[in-house]
Length: 367
Image (tube, helix red, strand yellow):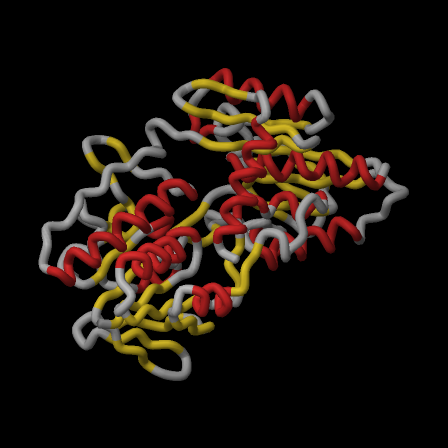
């Protein structure tokens, strides 16, 4: 029995690990266009140099070998659900069960110039390119770096930029721009937003909320209110969209995201499960957040359900915990500081140490 896993992020790796724990006989094959797993939550720290690429990535071929699985470095071109084959550039791969864990992609909302002129930290490659661009700035003149999007990634990037320029003793103006009325809008918690905003602005970050980008030029950003600011580097952290592969597949979707049933199975495809940032999952009015915790939990449940499906047993219903309505997170702020948002409370004591402990423990588990 062959299980094919598309995508080797947090969700995909959790599926692979859980399947192997539950079954020694299954043939497990994982496909990803990257050669290394990347701990995405730590990518902003590439900018400040707190972590290196080796610290927060793992060779996927080595990981697959460690659990007696196969890894293929390729980009999936298409899927034939009737023939049960996945097409990559060089061949077709057959499967008995399929798990879609291809994640999401950055979106620029069709804003002219945004994709052309922006840097990012949503991949290791993007974070390293951004760090290289920072290193090329003139350390004599005052630089201007604009971070667009004050969600979790945006505020973490702003904090790491403060640390970066502090080490260089170089003058810099750091802008953090958010279209919504407050920073961290997905959390909808005024005390959290104020705490984070005060921490960053108190160290020099210029924060603008209710400010939307209209166009990005080669050296200036035009906002919808007519204001224009010059920049040397723009880092885009504003939003994600469904993976390109998911967009082209003729499968049920909700708001563009892949729709799954209560068992994390794709409707109409009994042998296909989907997990992680690529899906839209809602139960009893609670929608899964697109975060690491949900990706891992979904991976465990989907793998368990896949084993149950093979055995002809009743599948387990998934219940989200880290939801859009009640999110929780670690949020780094630079200077080895962080906040934990959990159950409506803002916790600062030992928050950064705990965040790093979770990161190190996870990475050790993949070795």
